[in-house]
Length: 178
Image (cartoon, rainbow, N blue to C red; front, side, top):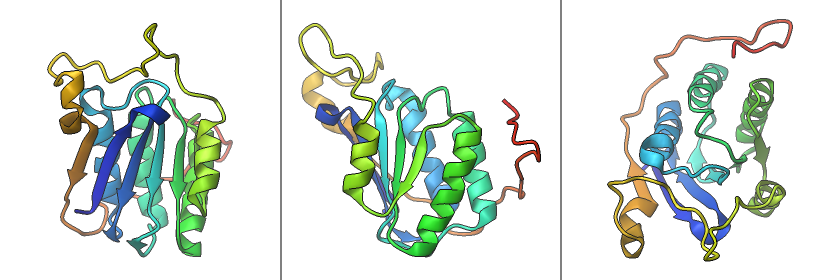
């Protein structure tokens, strides 16, 4: 599978892993999946590991991913950390980081997981319930607490190819369209 994710309630985080040849559509679908059905609880961090991904996104791919992230920004309220493996991946993730900052999203690129985790955790986890339990996604159709495996993990598989989205650029004055 090109991507997997799992909820890590003890960390108030979602851990994602993208593998195989780089396809921006898979990264976009990952974030759509995380935001669907309340899977991304408010304030939870998202750790995206692309260290085993082959290649790097294009600048057009970064622009396309940014459009997706902006559209989902009301559901992505925690910090998002991308862990990269190759210098080219890191450079493109830094480009995404700059665009995300202009759009008001908390997203950063890292060369290793410990640094990404430290940054994601800096703001602290969201409030815990009165019973000391971390918040879980609120989905009336979700399985009970004992059946979290179905809700807590996911995979995706998209066919490979170039991004169908046109190239976009940020306004010269640094403002965003939001």
